[in-house]
Image (cartoon, rainbow, N blue to C red):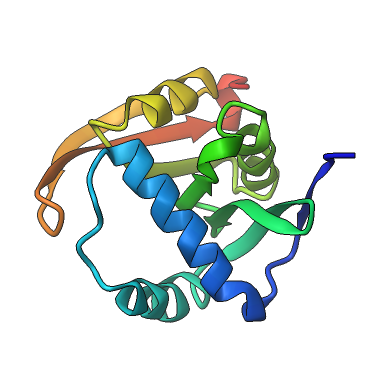
Length: 151
């Protein structure tokens, strides 16, 4: 049976998570990530792990998605490319909403149309538009509020 479960992150699976994250990012944003994989791993270890609570989605013993949230924001939410559209993102997002302080904000790249549709369908509203200088891409800041009765 192909059941997906949400569980805690196990640090020994960092490399597996990074590979899934990179493939999902490149698919969604439509660019190849020029950063060395070791640099992305170090960013994850230094910036994501200590600052966010993580939940991973597992299917058939493999990581197929993850969310990193801190109660106020979502620092990352990525789904393995073959699993996009199967409800895993919604499950991870609901996990973050359930543990939020009643509001969540996040950024996504403007060119990631699937992510934008997903967040808007999930009750997030655009609150700012900008430009992310490291990537040189336009981005959008979204916010969700439990008080608006959003999904």
